[in-house]
Amino acid sequence: MTNYRTFLMAVFIGITGLLQAQPISYAAIDRHALKAPAQLHQNLPALVDYLIKEATSDTEKARAIYAWITHHIQYDEAAARQDKRINRFLADILSRKKGICFDYALLFQAMCQHAGISCQVISGYGRTNLEAYAFPESPNHAWNAVRLDGEWHLLDATWGSIKGQDAWMIQYNSSYFLSPPELFVLNHLPNMPMWQLQACPITPAAFKEAVADIKMLKDSCYNYRDSIYHFLKMPLQTQKYLEAQSTYTIFQSEANKRNWSHTMLDQAAALSDVADSLKAVADPGLTVLYQVQAEALAWCQKALVLNTTLQPWQEELYIGLLLDQAVTCWMQANQDEQWEGQKLENARDLLTQAQNRALALPEDRYYRAYALEKCQSYLEILKE
Image (cartoon, rainbow, N blue to C red; front, side, top):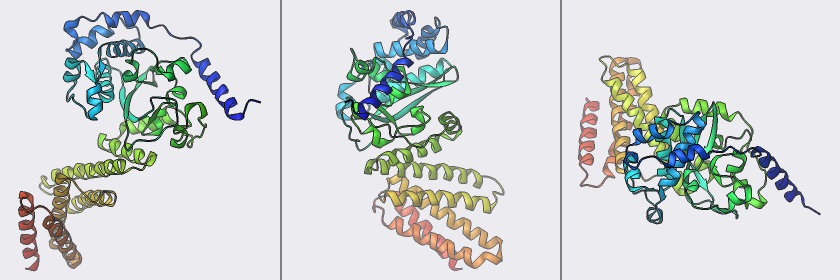
């Protein structure tokens, strides 16, 4: 008797088969893309202009870009073995004609943007076979989401560049260009569930199963289109924070925890810049300045809960924020006698924290001497 798990998979494959019942032919646009003159290959704007001039829709534009990249860019095995990106700029990818997954995704995004197509680089976990999956310490793959005719679609130029077909392509008779989300998620788990492009995304637990035994375990259902819309309206730094938070939720490794803490400190740095711009105003408004600095300090403290070892610039940022907030408290004490005692006490506490953190810095660090001098100077003023 056919067991229930096999029945579920049969139904699932049948549904996805219907989605592909009428395949679209891209033969003509592919031929055009592959005829791009060699002299254009390192000139991204001119190359994209050539690729899309025969396209009759945004889908054909995206296909022409995809066809060119997957035909001309090779996977950089040496960089992959070293676990690092050799290319620093888009020009490096085009001149070397080699890259790792992030290079493919970044190049595809840049070419789409020149063509007037909305495109996002998606990071997450990719499985190269159909067996049970163990999450690595941090996300190991990148691909793209592209918006065509008002709808988001998924593609993977890295795996699309592989000559021949892999096990996933053979089993599901699909490709990595605009794959149905229900199929794409079988070997691509994005850091943020909304980029599965499914109303009811699968869970990380489901993704760990062998594809043949995958359980249709779902997260709570929601409007992913609305989520994507509001997400892309957020500041870039907030997007990075939310993605790092979601990544840590998927797999709570030390690497993902450190990365999440770094995005918190990036948030603090952004708020520090806001505070600096407020201080440049003739009358900044001490209450607003205090609140911005307090929020920045809160981000630093949240980061320290996850990761007690800060990078040098992060440690200096934290000490600088403590010093700045102490000065703001002192100014508030001078402005309002009612809160003078409390504000002066807050200032002393902040300076003590800054002093202790500065003392922990290496003695040969210039910032150590600078911060300690500032702390001592401000503490002397508070004694007066």
